[in-house]
Image (cartoon, rainbow, N blue to C red; front, top):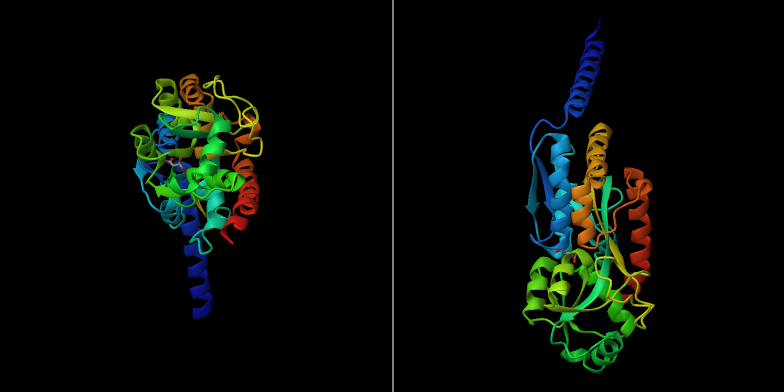
Length: 326
Ligand code: MLT
């Protein structure tokens, strides 16, 4: 056999051996700790949901899932890092409507694309958005809030978790509906932002329900309305925006797990199965529901369902936010 054919045979054998090794690795996955990147500060909604669900997932997977909070740029710093990670299933990210949808129209040079830079793994929770304010903010209800913020827009400051975050994007929608332009006050997550709201250092915020239920029930902040068609069982006394006279403000976020593009399908399947098992666990469900989460229905839990959701949410939030940035 001449030299060329020998080299070809060697290359083919090496490729086959590498493919075999990768497949064996995927079959044995996971054999060591898994890193779950959370793109915001500890204590915020993304962090809380990630810890609740991965806390159960690690029992199924038999390996520790280590949460790593990587902050900055509305979650896009972390998402860029996750997109560039080795696609072996040992680096994952808990993204959401901000990092994996609204960031696309808000960052023209985004270093990743939510749809093509990741393998969707599975949806964790839907998270309705609320209009929140410091407890001594003068308006008593949403109607008064609308009148007050229109009359005082240049004096107001609104907290958010960075351009591209859920809190930023959803309040961009609210501000455009009300035609107001408050000063935005960025934080590394709505965990720290909530601390500032409770302390009265900022005026209002649009935030995911899981971050607000304890404070609302504790009376340390005000909740004017929830931006979903129905009230939420965890906050039965908080009216919907429609009931309170602002039906045009509708906003719901979601949190989901993504892996870098190229992560083997067998690995994605094992991770998805662990998510599904967690979402069917009574303790996990109780904790998520107490915080106002919407637990995904069975048909919403597959990787393909998440891919469809990401694509539709990118289109939705591009239509909402692109006109605001012109
Ligand atoms: C967001 O605003 O995107 C998140 O609520 C931030 C966070 O989870 O801390």
